[in-house]
Image 1 (cartoon, rainbow, N blue to C red):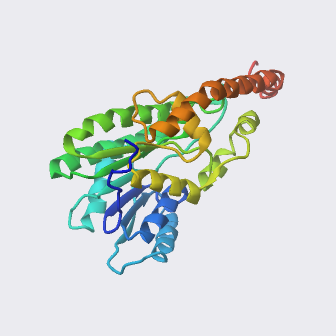
Image 2: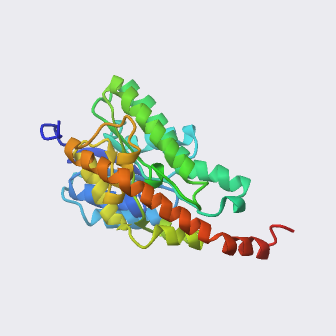
Length: 313
């Protein structure tokens, strides 16, 4: 009932495939798994970042038999994702990975009124399709190979539970990932494949620094200064998967939003989440009211911003 009798996941000797593994959350996770004795394959686009990542992973090797590989490959279509998966399997005699962590993705926060058509398309690709295509390819190949006991782990966001201004090109994809994961968590039981999904809050990563280049000041003000380093976020993800949690959180704020929007997702801890339910019943409306007050107070400043950029001309 409380997860006390469930068998914990042990990555030692297992092949773990991490998309977006050259930096941020993916690299932090690779570091943890290297120290746990796993074989690691990382995929990203930048070869220079991949080279640096593998060098850092090698320093954490605990067994000479561990296999660490890096591949520069696209993941933005079903065909590309399938080819990437076949590529990482080659170093293991064609055997598919035991666990796949879909950490690839990015965000470009801005006002909805400033987004272009391409921004909207790219937003869904980077927030949803990069992970969905990998899961699609992995499911087909794992089922054909009879890969029971394998894991597919998605990375959504705290914004997969709620949202606020500035994230119109990003949040829809993260909500879609939750919908996909909730469906697959049910459906892949047919094949003995486990599904997990992580909802991290703010992570101080290179991607976060890139986001801030376009992020509205009001969005930054609502977010505040709290957050996790990539290593802290990776540790929370790793711990959640080890414990067999389906919805995984890294902090109390996310736990509260999880409690208020859980739907039919299974509980990780009945007693603790019952307490979160009670707290969230009062805390979430207070949070929402505070955000709406900040947005309304920003109206005049926003109108000035639009006028200066010539929007009404």
